[in-house]
Image (tube, rainbow, N blue to C red; front, side, top):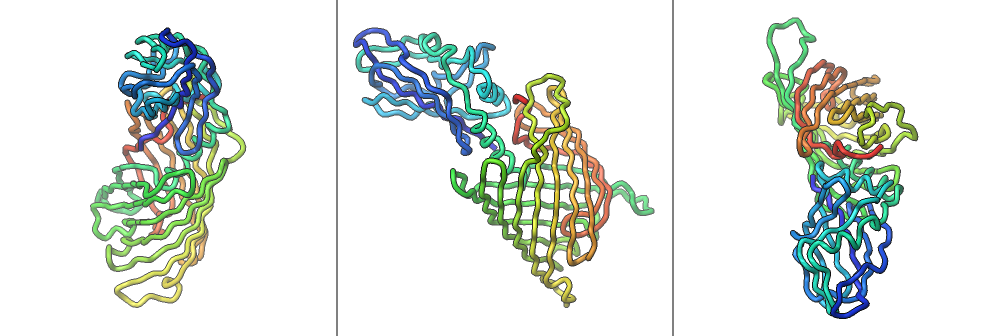
Length: 383
């Protein structure tokens, strides 16, 4: 998924027909919708819209992030620099939370104004060491918003094999897929769809399932999230034979502590453990007559997920959950641990062990998986 930062420059000039100087630079602003702004004050009005390919945010280590868009109106003093955040440049913005020294804006072409100009390369000296820091509370709100929306449907593709819980020489392979996309993502409620599924080489595998939620509404606050989803689930007794419509409510929040640090001094963002509480109502259908206990049912689930960055490019993802359903009338559990490596870009390669009762089917299984995932919080971020 792409992420954006917006840097707002307010430009007023003092001496016509002369080179310009920066009058004032305020702190950097960030909001939960992946936008930030840096306000620069000069002494004149812009004469034309610059080319975004010629402007960048830079730090003292030689790293640069080029603009993806510049918004401005000729004749006024405001220019908006738009940047995209990815796993290669995330650390640049994260470091601005605590230390803005050596940061600057750079221009590879001259900026023309009504009473003068900034020559190519001159903006760096005018802004070096003067870029303001990002408020820590604003950044935490932004991070949690990014993390929680994908916590419901983290983009993953995994292939695996069952570990022989039955006395059989037959090897069963399967794949798991999780995908989602936004219908609406703004400062208010976010609307998106989600898809989860498992398909194996065993046609009679009762662990196979599909979950499709065409509409999920996510309400975001600083430290917690509430989501409501409507969808369908099917597959565990053969696709089309038995399924159910679902309505689910979920509450997510962070625990107030972060007990494990395996970063070994590397600048990795450490998210506190996240708890997810869910209540789901189900209305089943089938090609055969169903008992009343299956026609309408209720599931209550408590889950904790803890993603632990390891060294520079590895991570350990742990997850445990308990589920009580009126279908099984018992408390069931599942836990898993994934050890992964973050490659170039945002893709992750992982090995995962999982044991417990499966979603939807309530079948017990032990699995070993190899897979790929797309990282939401990239590997380079401060503690």
